[in-house]
Each structure stands twice: as structure tokens, then as C-alpha cells.
Length: 237
Image (cartoon, rainbow, N blue to C red; front, side):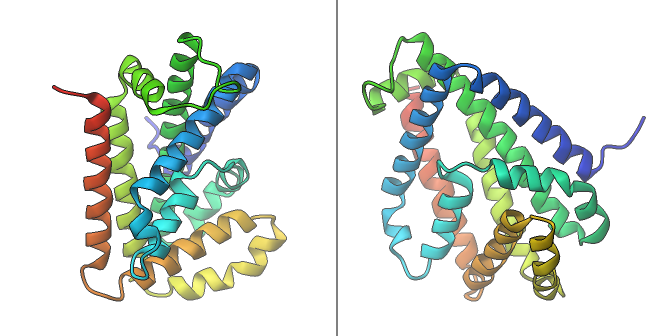
């Protein structure tokens, strides 16, 4: 039996994403529901972490999580770049960089699946997000009907694991020089989005790690607030 490589896992994740996106794009109402869900989740993140976003100590890391993981922007360009050079990442770069790429790919695949399931449920409720903004009551109802609590908990674990990996690569010898050396080749190969993510993640967590224990504190705050939000959606046990 063939061993599954990091590149295989990246390709599998993006294959799943492509199938979901292809299906969703054929259904205008589904796309409207998806956009409404992501806008709702983006605003929720901004509200939940308004203090961290405004913080000098945690602002850059929180903004990185928001723009790169929790935001409602289109990640398709960066996703395609990751998939296109999956084998190159595996062959040319340290394992720590490959692990970040695998984590990000699998996190996006799970996020795409969960958001799609939520959109399907909202559609089944007859809700029209193009007519009325998605509110907390409708989102919570769709959450409970979708029964996604366990998968959302797994999603949070993946986000936290990705944060820990990004911190670890800041201590890997030669990574800063490697990333700088990648700039021109990446631009020439139309991999600017991928390069930007790697550099931004490295610099953000390098800065965060300058003070001992600050990365752990940041990730602990994320974990506690997200778990509180998940419990509120699930309701009384």
C-alpha cells in the first residue's frame, strides 16, 4: 500500500474543495447563503476579538488569524498555488514548511465542507439572505439542525495546531533566509499569494514569540473564547 505523502494530502484536500465549490457555484441560492454565513462569521470574529485586534501585543497575530483563516475573503488563488507546488514544497523545503502547507490545506477543506453544510441547512429553512441579513437566531438554528459541533471542535483544534506550527518554524534555522530567497522565484511562478502567506505568518509569529509565553497566551485566549462561543451555539446540555 502506498504511503500517503504531504503532497498527496494537499492534493486530496484541494480536490475536495474543488468538488464542493463546483457544486455550490451551480446553485445561486447556495452561494448567497455561503456569502451570508461567511460575512456573519467574519463579523462575529471581529466582535469577539475587538480587544485583541486593537492590542499592540496581540493585534498583528489576531489580524493574521482573521485575514488568513477566519476572514470572508476568497482564498481560491492561494489554494491553487499551494496545490500546484505541493510536490515542490515536499522536495525543496524543511518538513516544518510542508506541515504548515498540509495543515492549511486540510483546514480549508474542512471549513469549506462545514460552511457548505450550514448553507444547505439555511436553504432548507427557506431563508433568503439576499433579502434579510443573517441574524444570530437563524445562524444558531442552522447550527443546531446541522449537528456540526464535533466537526467545529475539530476545526478549532486544527486552527490552534496551525498556530503552534507557525510558532515552531520561527525557531527553525535558516527559514527566514529561505523565505527571502523564495521571493523572486515565487513572483516569477505567479505564487505571490502563497509567498505572502508564508512570510506574513513567519513574521507575525516571530514577533509574537519575542516575549516568552506570549504565543501560548494568545492561543489560549483563542481557544477559550471559541469554546465559549461553541457552547453558546449548542445551548443548554
